Image 1 (cartoon, helix red, strand yellow):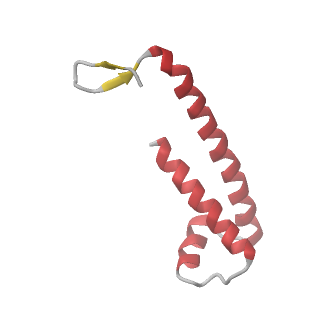
Image 2 (cartoon, helix red, strand yellow):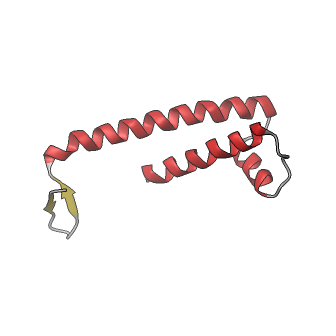
Length: 86
């Protein structure tokens, strides 16, 4: 990727890369929105916030139903996508 040197020593992508960055940001936002909707479905179904569910699931307190593994996978994907937005 071509970059421009800024006075403070940081690098900035050249303007021709900005559409790609915008597309990636939009894609990430869409994925986060989709994952949030799926998590909300589980939260409403089980009356439990995803964060609390995940802590209990990791501790082995949520059972082995397919829903639990699916919820866990969606929550892990959500956390991964969130870390990419920072």
